[in-house]
Length: 143
Image (cartoon, rainbow, N blue to C red):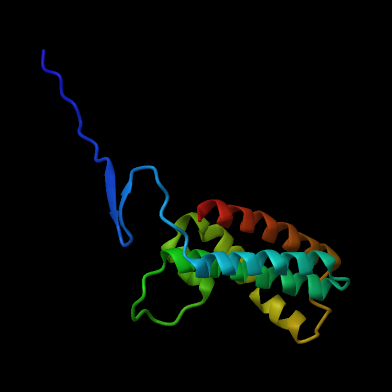
């Protein structure tokens, strides 16, 4: 009887050098700062009185969360211009549905920032705040 064993590497090469397997790569300071900004933005959204302000602040907080993820995964290069949501769907396909959800809300956020309130109901604003909170929790876990 022949016994085969698989040899598993005990170290992994990274840009920061060799790390033992199972050790997470350090999160860049820029990504941590963006995630902190996103958390503060979500706090502003929760405290906002007007639905347009809640919606816009929550959507911008989600955008900062996406930027934090992109800061850790996107490769510099000469890619065509794309929104953060398009880039996130490419570099982190597990977040594609989230990217589509927030991309669909971009026009409403722009309307809210312009002071146009008829497009955003209090329910939509509350939903955006909840979705942003869930999204940021997932982003934090992914980092």
